Image 1 (tube, rainbow, N blue to C red):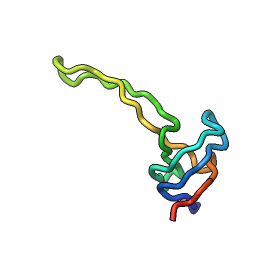
Image 2: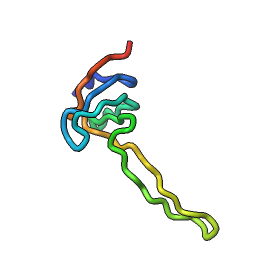
Image 3: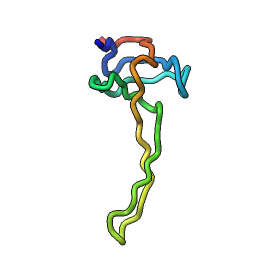
Image 4: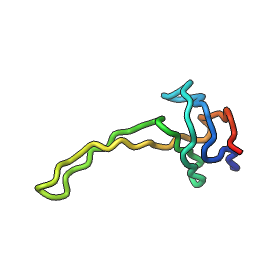
Length: 77
């Protein structure tokens, strides 16, 4: 399937948990037909310390959304 959205385009989420929210495309994963959107669908990942002296931390990661769940608002030239 050909994706008509490019990096930097403004989009709107049309279905799912983030329905009605707006964002900007960060990257496109063509293999899975998914799109990474700025500040949308953020998951938290707990990182354990590698050595005894280090501390663990919580990392926030933007996860991809399927192409069918978004709508193009404005295109970048």
